[in-house]
Image (cartoon, rainbow, N blue to C red; front, top):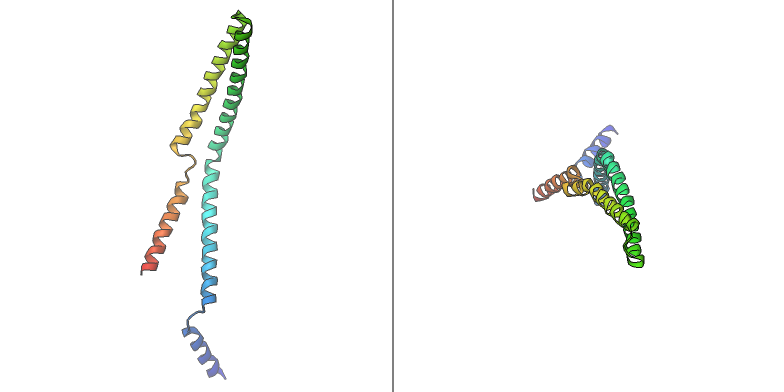
Length: 141
């Protein structure tokens, strides 16, 4: 009876895995790969979150200041057209232009961060590129 078990084990070890088993293994590897990529992207996102939070606050302040500038310039323009050129209207115009300049200056860090590639996840992209090359070489072999 032990020889039958030994023979059966030897036969099972030499047989090729079934297509279903190979697909299951492939799906398991793809799931593990996806989970690893998600972890890598999450780590990069966590690393950049402080900068993103600061930039979001700067963008919010800039939006508020630019909205204030727009409202003041609108009031100044309406006042200048409706009543003529009195001094309080010029004051509103000067304040509106000042707020506009402050708002545009507040957007400069956001613009610089976007141009420098803050939203590019280089480590994740490089990992995907390396993995694609590895798969190509494995399939070619």
